[in-house]
Amino acid sequence: MQEQEIEAEIYDVSPDFLRNHFIMVMVEEKGYKLNTINNRIKAIKRFFQFLFDEGWIPYNPAEHLKLRKGHRSTIPSFTEEQVVALLKQPDQSTFTGFRDFVMLSLILDCGLRVGELTKLKMNQVDIKESQLLGVIGKSKKPRDIPFCDDVRKLLIRYIKARGDLPSQYFFVTLDGRSLGVRAFQSTLRKYGEKADITDVRVSPHTLRHTFAKMYILNEGDPYSLQDILGHTSQDMVKRYVNLWRPEMRSKHTKSSPMRHLYKGRLL
Image (cartoon, one colour):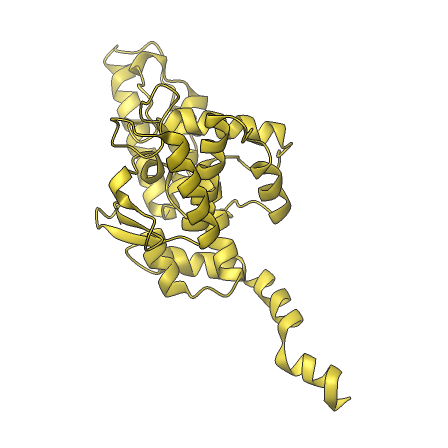
């Protein structure tokens, strides 16, 4: 709840709240292993049963939560068409619209987690070397993340539009305060509605997954992807590779050296 910047009152927790903000976050955003997810569901069920038995709450909202089945869930990602539609939604003629466009672009180019994005500080953006410095994620290990020249130009424009503010945070509101996680998540959902994206959850983590997918399909290697994403092991990266292997096969068919040789010389 803290990561989602939600202040949850124990008396107000509902079954839908637990499914959306507890279980689905573990499944879709965290990518936890099945055993981890089920152990945490069991723990939350025991916790709320204790509260109910002791008379602290009038009913147990976790009573009917079910354990996850044995198959691994698919990792949600956007299509290229959906990405383009999403990027068209912010009104770049306004400060907030241009800021949102830059934030979307930075996630899609660097695979940042939403907390890493909103907590980014001015001294972490190295325009000269085109990289973000000392980004700290779940592993608590700082990492430097490169960004492309197109994003570099966007960041230069944003810095000029942002102006000289006392806030140390890079992305700010109109009144110069740091932008919160929930505010960005809410804005992103609205852009998703305007873009008519209905078949996938419109969230910062879906953008992160989309970055990973496009990186792999554009022939990025899994080891550099692991460093960029800040994963401590190759487990999640291997899952990305395996999940999108069919699309990699299609890409190979189009790019196959032998296919082009046969078409050009051998037939």
